[in-house]
Image (tube, rainbow, N blue to C red; front, side, top):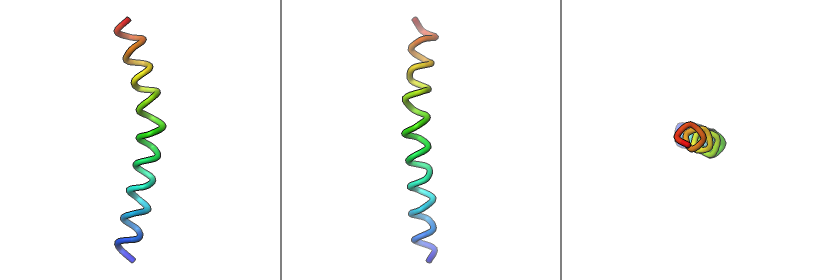
Length: 33
């Protein structure tokens, strides 16, 4: 049960990172330029 919960949390973090990274990368590129 603990492993399943951990996997679910990891998937959630993974999805959040996938959504946030492109946005942050775009903002950083725009700020630098």
